[in-house]
Length: 441
Image (cartoon, rainbow, N blue to C red; front, side):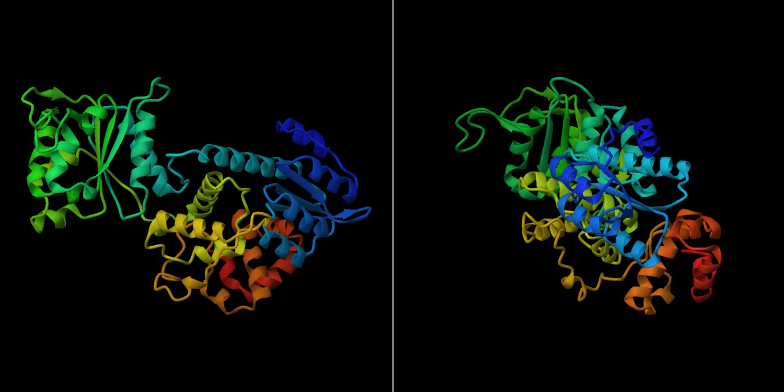
């Protein structure tokens, strides 16, 4: 029956009737999904899961049991189990579980490529919707605003990709960090220079505007451009014409200009460091990238994406993220945003041996950070009501499992109890200890 359901969902099935047979199969084949019964002729699924986590940590595992045990379910869930189903099996529940697995894999496959925005939260969906709108107008100037590390450069690359989908050859994408160019070289770097335009100019040199013709020119940290050069950039934005240094013949730019800054334009204008008229030329279509603390519900997805990308870069197998470590990260403010998260994952990966299936995520440095515990989980997240923080470690695990079951079942006691493998009366007894869960976060 299970094989039929999985095949109807588009899967290929290998069936094993014993732990020994399953052990031989995982040595031979990498499985995307493992449906694991608990009581088997030569052992238990609980024991086999520990081996499976070591041998095939990337597999998604669903445990099925006719004799549910809460402590066991807590332990398995804490160690990365995808779901825990009870007999008699509800086929519609199993089909829904398989659909969630497929969505998870599809999301992972989509994310493991460079220059892609990661996020399913409402905040990131607003950004993605805005970029798709801007992509329909290939010459519209776009301004990205947001704190350092929020992914403005990634958003610029994503906008470029969506503006020119499937074009071959792909129009150029040229990026310039404005803070890294000396003031005296800015004009030549941007517009190019003719032979003899300045001392040492022994040949014609094309600028970045010419290199980006027909595509995208990305000016990062645009508020760092000195005032004199801002005037030259303003003239270029107004007319889309430019002249190479030492050349009188004008050229036309037909691509898109994208700018980004982590500063407040209003404050820079008041301080006299940024031209107000240039602001109006840049701020045609503004998109604000949210700080990570405002979309922490994307943390798991971001961590998986960046860990996979780092593993590909370092040519090593991908370890799994410990669920307990992810839970702690949700209480951290991440002042450095996504860039800080990636840095943490990279340092952790380099300290994790290749043959270890779990990432050694060292979080001890967070305890002394002022941002640790300084934010609240966004609506729909997994933050704990205050009473849970006084529980023992074991009670806290049970508390979190009950909280998650109630959240998934929309507060329905009978369905949540079935998900936990409890009678409704047993669940109600627990809710007498934790009445705040009846309403949920």
